[in-house]
Length: 349
Image (tube, rainbow, N blue to C red; front, side, top):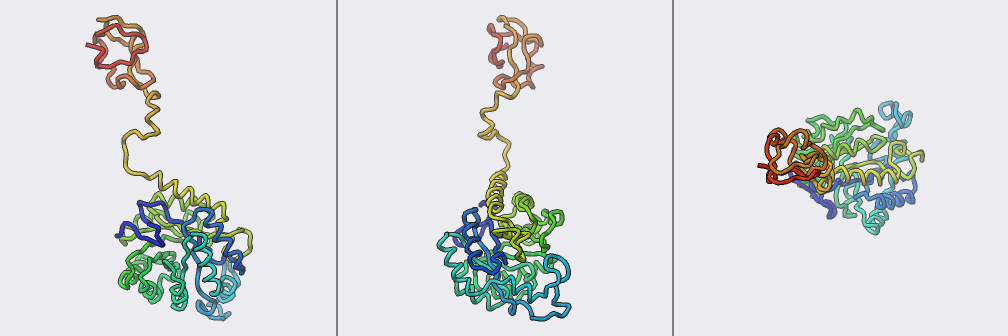
């Protein structure tokens, strides 16, 4: 497994702070101004990248109201797939202005292509990376085409079983992908935290020999922050300007201040992992006085025996460790010892 990959100059891996992707998805709600503002807010919040979705209703489905093409239950109940994607898709002529705006802001931008024509568009814009969406993980020809660009790839695994994940990884690697991250994901909108089974993340890293991350559809940040502690080096969350905006994805997306909290807390969690350490930390060095140690608690004359009456284990911690208490009882003082003296072996016979 590669220990790190690089997207647009940003190193990604266990040795680097989590790479936070703000998923714009359908949260433009039909207005390019909203999409531009999400870019601005994502940059302000500290996200590393904004991700788009590149498809049209005609490239992703058919205009049909046969039952197989209708959504039953959930957020989008009663809509046909065509209606859903017609309301959600991002017009292709928005892509260049958004790529240009991201460059101006200094934030990385890339997308999830949903067919070959989308890859061609994104290649024309020199997209620095590609994301394969969960539902497309079984589209091996699409994965092959994306891998052939030679760009870094991120693939979500929602709904996929172990064999499907392995096939997708093999297809990517066998067709030129050398930089790959696999995101654990639950394809529910929103998804309950209790169904996330985050212990899958380190297992995926071992099982498939890849860098891992999380595509998070829960409605707060706890799951994502916990994932960092389990090795997630990429965190992806949907982001909106207004959770009550009425768009297809608004209700399970983060608002800008919540994205800022995610960026901050994910980095804090990663920093807290540190390394295996049993030594005092810098923060602890000044607190030795709050430990216990052996002190003279009554004046002791030279030659006098140390006893439970004149030495005790008390704070601060500058004397002998309390474990030596029984060993020093009955020994003689080499010198006069004043009350409050930190006991040491040099002071006793």
